[in-house]
Image (cartoon, rainbow, N blue to C red; front, side, top):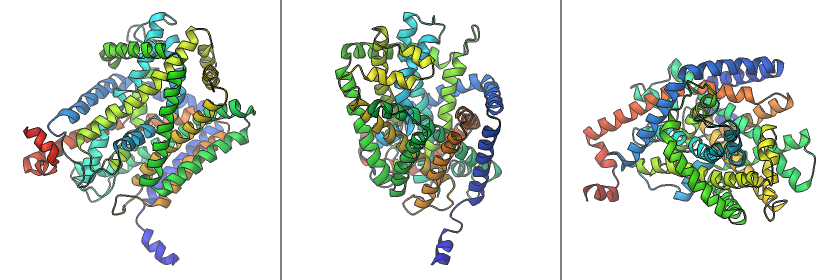
Length: 526
């Protein structure tokens, strides 16, 4: 039996890619353990130089991708159906899975606290600590967590979905899609292997940090609920518990595991936000949201191209460019996942669900949490700005929640469950992307071996645990994973070019006409 099992699995996985990627990850972790300060400083210096060189290009690239995303939603190819079946997921499940995969638990922390950074160190030349800076603070959060980030996912998601469902590329891999666009479907070149490696390191590094950095937020909830002092064993227990959840959902599969987890987590998060909205300063939240959203719309062009060459405050490098590079870090992960769950959808549905669905989820969260937190600050109910600047922003979050009925116990319990659900959903997405990237042969339904997903779940758990046991910083790993992903700007440019080339060729050959769903065809003709 064992021999038969080996014969079945032999050749299905890219073992050389897995081994090399893990070896380099282990080497980096060892470097952080032995020389944490030198490693962090070295990576920061390289990152700053890369951003200085590619920063202007990155802002132009992001704006162009946003324009292309709108074109996919309204252009001549909007009605092209991806796949020959009905959609596998309801629209709620579809958007919920993508939103939770994209936001993770980071949005919970930053939703309450990010405005404080923009208030103290604002962009666009605003005076720090001024009324103008405070009014712009939430608007900048809307900008950084909105359309300018999700547009990158639209392009790579549609490109990979078209390659997989229409062009019949056998695997959901960024390198395989790029190779097919170049006319090579026989194997992977050295460049293809490098692309796969950057995907693996970016996903493991980024999500490993996401899991590790969720610990203080979850630990704060435990302290608030039980009054316990958070010890290292408890922190490890938090990581292990979250790992068990996302490993179980990964093993069950996307259709049953992640869909149900995402639906539950998204539903609870919506209820939580509605409660904060109604029990908190409702009128202020509405006014501040409308005011901030209007400010973002008015300043959108300037924020999109703000490089601050005269004052050189460092704001674009610390925030806007960092965010744009951060989205590139998750581009392959989200591209693979969006393609996987988009079977049966039209290009228009994928574009709008990704661009506005994910953005709306982030806007709703930041609007409620951010406005509530700002109100607590201006009414002197809590000094969240001081707490954030002291590096204990999670303490400020629970102080703010205490202002609401049930804020001492019930809300922290709900927030703890939401944290687990969001992190587990994001890491579940990561295990799928990693398994797809290291798979040579997928199942008939496009699924990958569940044990390979479990393997990557273990890796995603061990990386943050090793850093925690070494008492090292997550900053170096996070920045390095983003740094390695910066070249994805050029990969996505090539994929956008290849996708539109395919669409043009298939339109001329008549294939596009066959892919338009009947209802949409009537809409076009009518």
